[in-house]
Amino acid sequence: MKQYYETLGHEVTIYTSENLCINDNLFQHDFFILKSKKLVYLYAGCFLKENHIPIYPDPHLTMKHKYRIDAHFLIKKAGLLYPQFFIGSKEALNKLLKNDDFPLISKSLMDSGSKNVKVIRSFEDLNSLNDDVVYYEHYIDGIHHIIYFIGNEISVAKKPPLSNEHAKMEQVTPTKKMKEIINKWQDGHNIKFGHLDVIKETSSGRIFIVDPGNFPEFTNWKENDDPCPKICNIILDEIKNMRG
Image (tube, rainbow, N blue to C red):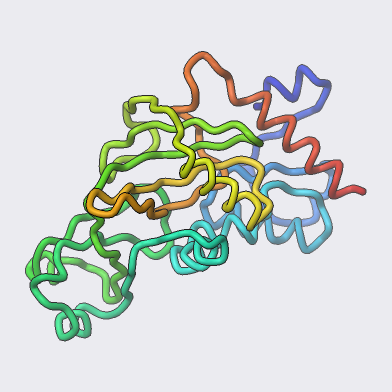
């Protein structure tokens, strides 16, 4: 992205943990691109947005993608399906759960993708978790896919269960239902590019959203098709709209 913007005549500065300081010095730049979901960058994004500095994607929306409970409500607002989930202490869940509730999927509340994802197959597995408060979803038996979208373009890959987007995947043809899901997601939240991790349930054929993302690496985007110029141009258009 840096190289592409520089070819268009833009001067680009990349901020990392080593050089990012959240203060008025950031105001010297014309606009910002929020690529990371790490909290320090999200804080910087919110600081810039509150000071009316153009930034894309919206840091508040990115924060909701990172926090799983907010992400579930975004999915619900778009009229899409998501797994049933529970949050509580291990003690409370031990009282609530029955043996036929397993297997479950344990995830961190403030992560995305496949970080810290575990399959919980028994009470013994549940009690082995180190967190005082745990979050888990009902396990859905089915085929996993990652659905990328950039504008009106869609790319779908079959995803190994519990893997991240950098795993080796097989490209598949998007179905009509997948296209409908992406249209609902984009229309419901005005999102121009991103991805959805989904599972097509074996027993019912229903598609559940298990993780949304608004700035993936697009590692398994369409073969021989560079997503970078498309994304960069969308961002420029969005920045122009912010400036009126």
